[in-house]
Length: 268
Image (cartoon, rainbow, N blue to C red; front, side):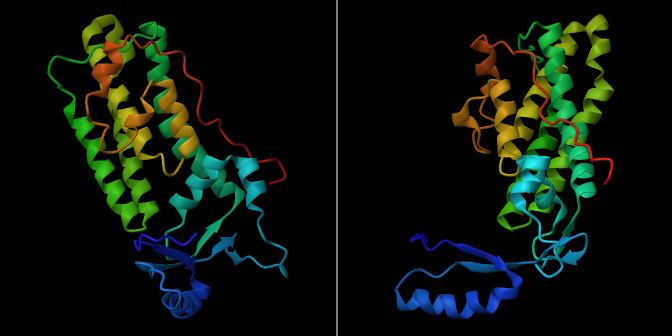
């Protein structure tokens, strides 16, 4: 399975760096196979601050954790909480707190209240944007976050990438609170639609951005929003897809919640 392309980043545990920077390259050279571009030694994942070992009986079962908390939620926690290169600790309480705070309360709630409002008040018709993009500052903020996200991922810094994504999520939540489309519905319906169109585009960009971290949830959201699978890339996201989707007559169905709140059993 070793790539023939030669553009390989080899990610291994820090305790076996010697084997993978001395012996493994020697094997590759003797077999005339390409060497990795770089070798990155990651830290240990600690169970409540302790190194996992069979003797301590604290070895985590990743399948059990994924079934308990959700695959996307577990991926998000590990990639956001643990800085690549350093050791990182996890606990059930920390996974629940991070998932509920970032995914359920921030991003999930942003998408749910925006899409539900459109489905209810516009009968699913996509809102009409303003003739001039007066809300371009928010889209620019999300676009800048996407650039930072890509750069950080290329530098093997997913926690930094997710921080940039969360700043854009917070900006969108601040925008919807400040613009209050539920109030504009009675006082300025045209402005209400412009606000909702801006949010629709921003949420889609956020979902495309976070796909590597929470692929199933991001894909489900983009499916709900009618976003073409072929355009779910950083290069294609600013290519006028929203106008095309509106012109197609797409009707948004009442959305399903993406991230149910996690709860800890009473004994924990």
